[in-house]
Length: 426
Image 1 (cartoon, rainbow, N blue to C red):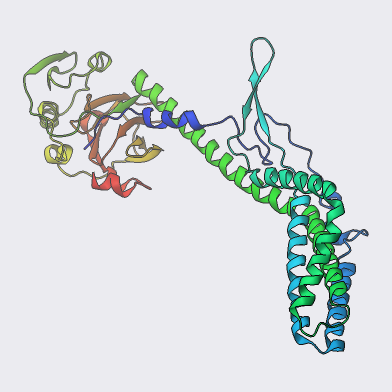
Image 2 (cartoon, rainbow, N blue to C red):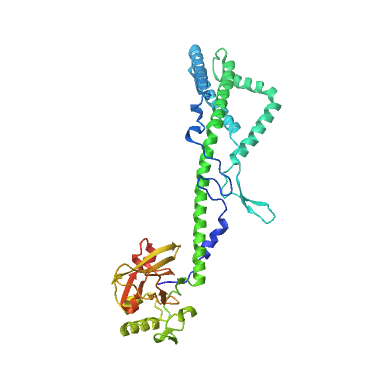
């Protein structure tokens, strides 16, 4: 029913990827002072809400006017072929100008670092954030803009000749050649390239930076929340490991059937002798806690339970003690999950009084034989409550003997609220 697992091992492996970057309540990185929150009425307005609006209307008017002039020229010379060629050239140069405007307008991303705690000499080690947005496009844009500016300045004298060649090529493509074809073509190239550049540059500078920042911030916050959750799981694993080391949390034993070999007789002040199997001796602290006086038939069942060998697939408590309710005589046995791992649960077992006379001094919790200490004597606290935490990887029925054997309760761990399916199938 249960098997040993290095509790913290799987969780600690994730510690290598956990950064000190965790979100604060306002989404700022841990160790980085968050900017003071501004009231809603002080928030920066969008460009469309300011008095200095981008000249979109001017650009739209200029683009429409240029297209109208080209159409009027085509209608005047009555050449739909030339009109189509000029439209294609205008679309191409508009696209090229837009691409250049986008590359020139891409904002530069600032890489954020997270300062760790100060060292002994007062210095602070700088730790890189766990997620940094890609700046490849920024680098490419930076290289291209520098190359284009440099080449453009060097070859500035030849640009006019190159533009004239484009006009001549268009003029040769149409027969007969209408008057002014080369000049119109050159004007189309200059006009549409300029409008495309300006529109794309302004849009990139005004809107693209905000879009990129919001997208990167969403990803950073998501990564940070995952890392914070991972740190929480590791802290929980550390606490469970400490409980295991101190004996406050009871781990399960090895999985699979184990045949009982030799037996050991252990004396207890209250009941004489208790026989347990040699392959799973009770801890020293366990042997120092005496079992309370129990009715004879219940005592015999307990001795048989302690003597029974380990059988992984058996529900030993039910086989020996039979079926019992989880609530009886004003006492209730409950269970809840306090920690969940990939293939193991930490479950807290609680016996408490909700009616009737006060409980006795101790409660005996009966676990599966795969536990090294299958019977645990837990003192009753002042509020008539006894609890025990166990670490297990599969279900079994746990029993609790209270009131010096007058009350026997049982609880099937498959009925624990929120228990996963793999635990029920174990």
